[in-house]
Length: 217
Image (cartoon, rainbow, N blue to C red; front, side):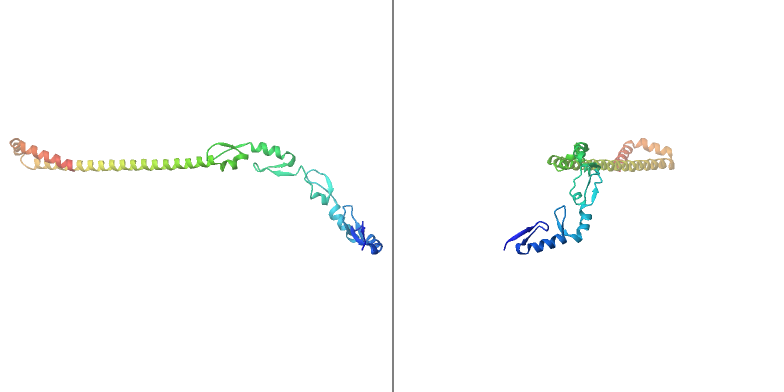
């Protein structure tokens, strides 16, 4: 069966019925300037939907509505990933280079790093090793601080013990002297002096014993 091409609906039609098809097609089908064949009853809505002139909100260029979805406007703003500002596409590349050249202090290695390299830098092996070293230093510093604290507490404890011993010895010595004074006043003072003269060795030994007892206290 031989076929003929209908230029109106863009279909292959049998040659035997082509004349009849052509009359019907031209009466009911319309070929739009965009190359689409549509029923004439839908032509108006098609033109409104696809061929109405619209204006780009960024560059003010007029175009048919179906073209606007493919329009890549150079004035359309893009958001800068560094400063979050909005800049037209035609100057965005220059801005992103300048903005990315600004530096920020790395909180790990304390170096100033360009913003465009910052994310990569934080993943670098050098920066991670530096962080490990810093953590180790901090750990050693804490150990040194703990040792210093323990030494200081030991000194405080030793000083408190020495002060306590001194107070105990002072109290014992005071009590001994008070007892001797009471003994001297309570008896015959002359006999007490005579006894001291007659028994100097005994008194000396007694004094030594008292002193030794004070040392023990």
